[in-house]
Image (cartoon, rainbow over all chains, first blue to last red; front, side, top):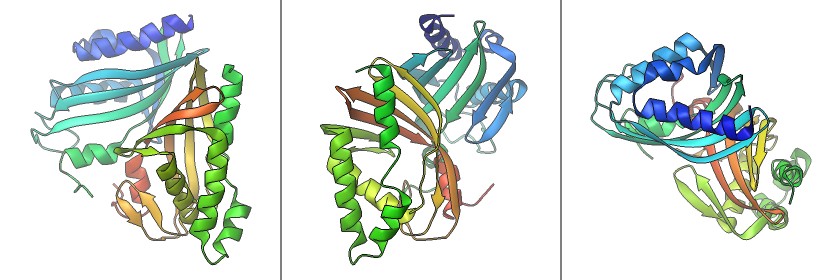
Amino acid sequence: MSVKENKALVRQMYELLNRRELAAHFKLLAPEFVEHDNDRDMSLEQVKEYNTMFSAAFPDATSTIEDMVAEGDRVAYRVTWRGTQKGDFMGIPATGKKLEITNTTIVKLAGGKWSECWATVDDLRFLQQMGVIPKK
Amino acid sequence: MSIKENKELVRRFFTGPGEKFIRQALKTANPMAVLTERTRKDFEKLMTPDFIAHGMGGEANLDYYVQINAMMCMGMPDMSFPVKHMVAEGEYVAVFCNTCGTHEGPMMTPNGIVQRTGNKIKFDSVYFCRCDKGKIAEIWGCHDTLTWMQQVGVMPKQ
């Protein structure tokens, strides 16, 4: 896979998420896929569960890729999610509040699939926007 | 500049003034002034004059970024930023690192200034750096802010 193909694969993953084509999205994750998210590790099954839950709780959520850098088998990108919390999410009842959060990820690709990724998520801002934690 | 040169430039930025220098500065009458002066000298070599940092809900110019980093030295004199991944292309370098140290002094956080707890700090940070002719022109930072706030004791652990 070339750097160009790897970047296209990252874009495709987010386009599928934006269109709520979750089954097609999950097919591009390798069976051994692991997401290292804020120092927690999530298996393929846990990622599937999380993304399904997020899509249901934020039915209008869309992602925009802000920047993308690729080298070798890795792609780093910043992605902004915008949406409205219309359903329960991780124990937070539907708030109707707006979400706007930018996360950064480095993904390792192999054989046209995602094999591993490392993500940093601004959870503090997320919880502030949902009204769970007061803003300072 | 080559990708290799840009990576080297960004690595220098993550070195900081070093614990020895910071501890000596803390013994002086005005540590913040000493650390600010040193950080300014370092950053003037590494960053463009119109440098902008994005993150933590706002933007910082070079002057403000110097102050934020000098303050970080006060908060964690043993601070280090071990790099776990670096991905570079064109004028961009993406860096995945840990922010590590011991919370020994007032620390500027997304939740305001937090006084010393003595706690060990270790959370993930990712920086996107845009380089321009051998200097860093722009940085976008993203941190695992919730873990950070838990480690400085302003947020309960789950």
